[in-house]
Image 1: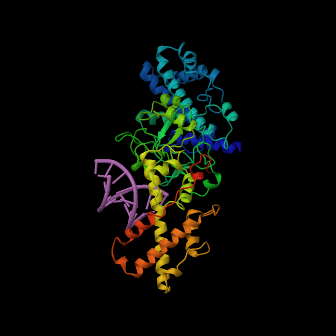
Image 2: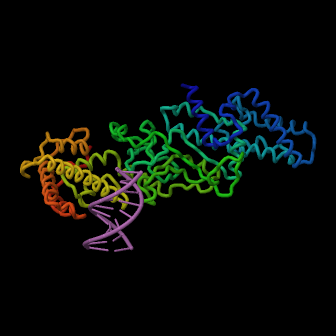
Image 3: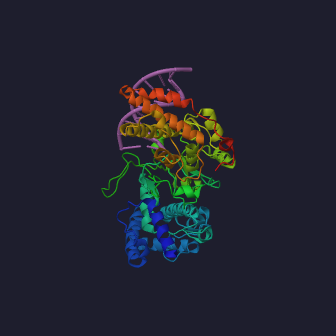
Length: 464
DNA sequence: TCTGGGCCTG
DNA sequence: CAGGCCCAGA
């Protein structure tokens, strides 16, 4: 399990740092021996180059000396044996590093030290970022373990990331993220979800129920959402015209919002399905990511969570709406507000609910027309022979759609309305009214008058 | 112009 | 179930 965690952690680190660093083998940093020799040569060479620029000294041994010097000065706060250069205790502040490394340094080597400082900060920021992700996944790694975890960033990756940051190029893929278009129905977020700082992501992207970042308040529903996949893609876009490396195809080239794309984004600018990805602000600031937008109304959202008011509709809401359909096919906005009092009503939420009922009606009328036509084809002698009972196939079809779990006692009134609807369709079709493109509208007018009051249980705060 | 509803499509 | 489009009514 530990090796799995480490591998996963490493993967996430790689992902955050930009997996497109093509010159680095995925597991290279774990094979420290031979790799580090090569790295050292490269690094010494690079340092030498910089040292030459900084001091005008041509001596390669001078660069070696500087490298040793820098490492020595870093050693008190570098604990990891694998990557002593970059493994820095998270408790060590930047100031400490600066004071330990730079205070005694000569001006000629100051630039080199500064680069180490930069890398150190970069490393720590990435590590915190990874930590914040792993801390939110107790199934993967416990908080206690995370507290003891240290910053471990292979230097080649640090450089890779540094380069990316410098030129503003990075593409970040988070594991287990959704890649598909998503349903508007999301798993209800956990109350403790809000963290100190959040990144806005503009979509509905329910995480896997296993993830504690968001989880279903109704576990039995979580697995039923067919269109909720366990993969999601977070893309850090890049600025056009930004650098590209290795001829690798790049998107745009600037660090952008962490986006979890969903269809809804095109419809709702301020989507109620907006998901928030918890990331420490420290990371964002230290990485100095352009276009990283901090949620401005996170406190307001906190209050919503405290009040147990959801910003988005959940699978439970959908289930409830379907049961409501047994009573009302055309619910008014007042009824909707009463029945979904635990939802913060926005235009988007309202239209989504309306859309739900529109879809419910669509299915309902399609079934009615289908069964009416088949009854006609079977030569039903009299419209009065057309009945809808709990045993009838039509009812089973409807019940399967609106009450799949079959744990709700469908009111008799619904059977009556269904029967009326079926007969209306039967009559209209038998009279050839279906030649008129808008022949169904007459039926709709009849059916909308047959709505019943929704029982008070649906308006109760304890539904579900 | 906005909103709700229906139809079609994926 | 959701998005796009169209239409009617307020």
